[in-house]
Length: 290
Image (cartoon, rainbow, N blue to C red; front, side, top):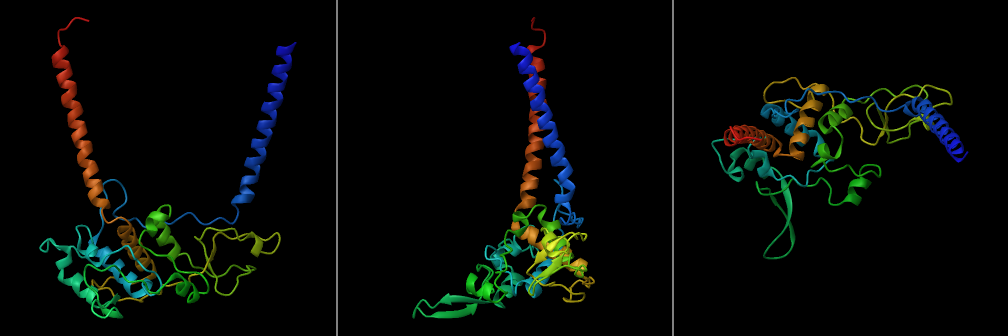
């Protein structure tokens, strides 16, 4: 009798679980409505275990960052000398010491760095050196927020690491600005972006189709022809977005290619070691009775 009651109780429990699961799956389409678009693929050369950065693309991406993004977004973890390290945009195999790279030294010298005079203790501005970090466009976070409608622009040093599928996320976001959908209530200082995560349901008329995407505080920073590339590449919005996304991905992990090469070498070693071990095992135990 007790066994039958237990079986009936288990059946009821399973029915309740199945019903709850059905309600969950049935509710998913409504919850998914209005979600951001799937990210665009930039087809980056560094993707995959054997990928590597395109130095020309990194140089173009650095130019976009310097001329467009650096006015709002800092890269306070990046040093000028890193630009000349192996795999970097301005690496020169004939100049082994990145700090002595003439081009990078010239780039750094164009930047004014806030410092303290060692003799007087007074704050001064001096020319940058290859050993300096990229300067922040604002003296502090409060000033950054005040200059941007209350939202401080994020530092881009590790942005590609901080976002899922970082390079494609940045590329998609920069190309995701679109006309405001009909009926969408948008406040001053906000912009509509198809790839920005969010739920626009509360800002649409009741019963209306909820568009994908969300609000972003950054206005569209790119326009066709905004920079002039040194290699005569056409500076379209799509091209600039792709280039600066690649540069930010490199800046977020400058040693990425070296790690890939080291990992490949380790795998080759382990494969050879496994083969030698197997051959040795067969030779040692050959003819030994079990």
